[in-house]
Image (cartoon, rainbow, N blue to C red):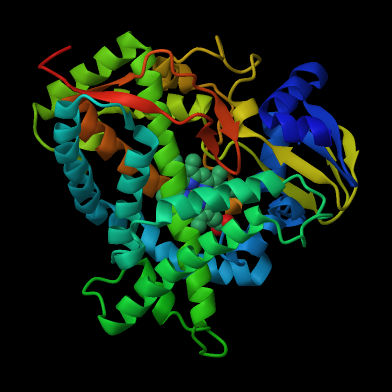
Length: 435
Ligand code: HEM
């Protein structure tokens, strides 16, 4: 399957699921594994028997590039890091961060007034990336990137591209010093510089309210009393900076695209926002009254899950869907595929937010919709991301309507995250009252 996966992983996995059903055997170079698409098998691997699985060796590239942080570490070390970070993501804590999120969205809205007047196409992916990065920086890491702010976007794009392109490589050419690799190392230096700047600033000025960064710096090992090394703090900050901005920005980018293509959901969303907010800025307490906004977000992440696929490796022999899964084999969980299986989703390819209404969701298998993963390794930032997306959509869709540049080709590109292959240039237009 290696050539097919390198060429077009979304198609290769989708095709296997449709042709072979719940369990499809994959041979990838010297590795073997199953694509699993039955929700009960997904539940077994991610949750019920999660102890028998580790993140697959395919994450090795990510680990080698960014260091071993919460996203990639395992066992007792992972658990310790997760416990240190967890308080920063408690619901009540996130409630207090809603103001920071709404402020950042309002700043983007002010900037969009200017862009709308200019009538030039704008790369919406960049807009969303800047917005979500501002939110992570201000709410979790309490700072700005100083001299690195201007170069970080290009650096991350280079890193993402390089890791993704070498994802399925077998390591044969990994040591060759190619120009691409030199670009990668330069990009990584920018990222490290930015993160070290954040940590150094924090050590100089303690923050008034404890945030994720202060928790990482203050953490002490229960047994040894030792604090984290600067290197480990850097790895964790890098992990959060990247995991927290990229996925959320992509979900929002796909959301603007889908809305631009579907008039009726666009109108219903605008009506809900007009009725509930009446032109004012959204607050945390408004979010429970915006059910349609939430459905639009859920439906966007169904069709375009930013974390489109992940994988595990069995520590001991297991059985999946009646088949032996020998120790060392992989299990692929691919939200992009699960979210489009005709057996579980009516008109699976259609954008239809109403399918997430409480009535229509009532008897849906839980593990067939997993944009944030599931089980102990579920996304630590899922609630944070949902609140942020609700506030951003409520702020921006109230005032603006986005139109794709006519004729622009839109296609998902499955790198580590699911990006629009040719970008997402759009016109930002002011909404005049009810549309
Ligand atoms: C729409 C936005 C987001 C999506 C779709 C998303 C998706 C995911 C998924 C699928 C995983 C699990 C991967 C696996 O099991 O292999 C994950 C893990 C993680 N996410 Fe997110 N994420 C989002 C936002 C965020 C935010 C805002 C943060 C932090 C500010 C964050 C931080 C993390 C971390 C640290 C992990 C690793 C957790 C662990 O293994 O203990 N994510 N995310």
